[in-house]
Amino acid sequence: MTSTTQAVETFNSLDPATDEVVGTYPVHTDDDVNAAVARAKQAFRWWSSLGFAGRAERLRRWKSIIARRMPELCAVVGAETGKPVGDAQLEVVLAVEHIEWAARNARKVLGSKRRASGLLLANQAATVEYQPLGVVGVIGPWNYPVFTPLGSIGYALAAGNAVVFKPSEYTPGVGAWLVDTFAEAVPEHPVLQLVTGFGATGAALTHADVDKIAFTGSAATGKKIMAAAAERLTPVIIEAGGKDPLLVDADADLDAAADAAVWGAFSNAGQTCVGVERVYVHTAVYDVFVEKVTERARTVRAGEHYGPMTMPSQLDVVRRHIADALAKGGRALLGGTDAVGDRYVRPTVLVDVPEDSEAVREETFGPTVTVTRVADMDEAVAKANDSSYGLGSTVFSRRRGEELARRLRTGMTAINAPLSFAGIASLPFGGVGHSGFGRIHGPEGLREFARPKAVARQRFRMPLALTTFARTARTDEFVGKLIATWHGRHGR
Image (cartoon, rainbow, N blue to C red; front, side):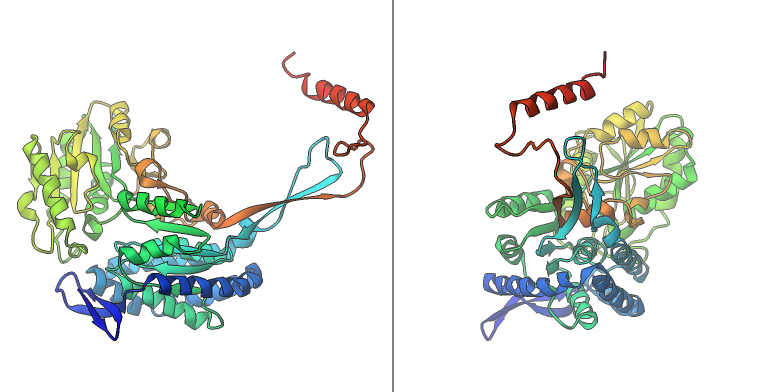
């Protein structure tokens, strides 16, 4: 997959459906990455000086280019991931919405705000504002190569940072398209730069003089990112996948729940970190629900409704998980081990799968789903929470949706609709446990890419000066009595 031309190592991006070469890109070295970061530090000074309004205007230029040339970007996404055009367009549309939200709300979220100064320091004017960090390194995934990295890139840029972006080695063309179009909108300085390559290039970015790393990928790689970043005390945001549950209560709309399960499990060939992998169904509706899911799943066709497995090695993972589930007593109502082909995996619906099987415990990242009968929603919640992951979740219930959502140990929950939290730009996106930490999107996402700056300004001198060696014993006595009287009266 690699070659050397005039001492510059390169690699090919391949169409996963045909292995046809889509493009050729450089393998950037440590020196290349460090040079990009150095350029970004210079660009940051200019970009941050533009202020919220200046940055918003330029981000909207970029958003406009993406929106107008959406078919072009979708074609690149499709070529490198195998996605149908509609799926590629869906992630681009959501990404555009997020860029607009970040541009429009950055000042409101990060701008200077007054804070109360308290009784003893009533002479002080207290304010807090959020200042940009500097240079943010973004390491993106291949499964949603537009939507996911732009959830970090767009918010980091809106907050005033420069960005060095390392896309997945499976989707470098998507990364190049995004960076090139940003340069059209913002030609003055290299505020957003691209570095391409494999794991070593990502490691170089983590070791470089960046001010934060935003990473999306596996938990195992996330741990390596954290360990490398710790050497420089570089803060990180980690989004490391999930094993997301869907809960179906006895009073759920079963048609809607079945449709959500099928789409959540099989869209994008199941290569979705917040996709549905485990379904827990109340015993009162279990049989009807399973019938509806199986009926709908039979109409979903690999190669038409979703593309091939983008990463070839994932085929072995999917095959292993299905085989393990069947060996431990599970049944395939649709699909099975023979559903795993050379490039595509047909939809697979598994039932009676023990909770200790790989198909329940590990992230499969393929078009499979396990459906489990539970006596009640307490059991459903307990089994859903019995996981090292905690990214997204879904609940279908007419009466208890919000209650059940609160009890789930996940960063996000959608009620009576699949994955809706990902498309709402004002909501934070992220997980707990092995799904990582930190948040992108929403106000929380903007604040992840800024540092709080507290300022206290004395407006007038107080007769009781506490921060001076000239303070008297009488002052201490008065202050002690004042605080005891004011704060000590509660609970009497």
